[in-house]
Image (cartoon, rainbow, N blue to C red; front, side, top):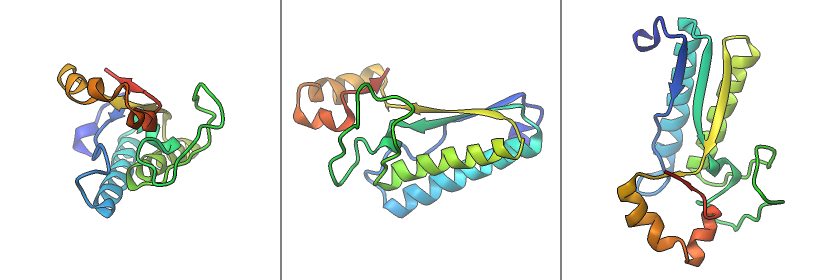
Length: 145
């Protein structure tokens, strides 16, 4: 609570960033609990605004087990939630936690469904080699640098 005391706005960007390399339960539990705790701290501290870093993964990309086809293109905020994996589910539930706080009048908020976040170094190591492969279709060729 001390970290958000006297803040006008809180931006929550902390999370385990992908479901790979960790147990699914750890990813899910950590991300959902962290979102809940940060939202509640912001509400108790009286923050007027809240920004939640959600993920493109709430649509089901790129960590699906059963292939997901977008119902239409371009993908927009009206697309149905289609998360199948612990990470995507955790980000979707984070949005729901934020929405619940808004419904009870805690603050105004926005959840931003960001695609794959890249630094210059990770882009050249990870995105560049994948751009022309079938595997890159799993994330609809979306990334943010």
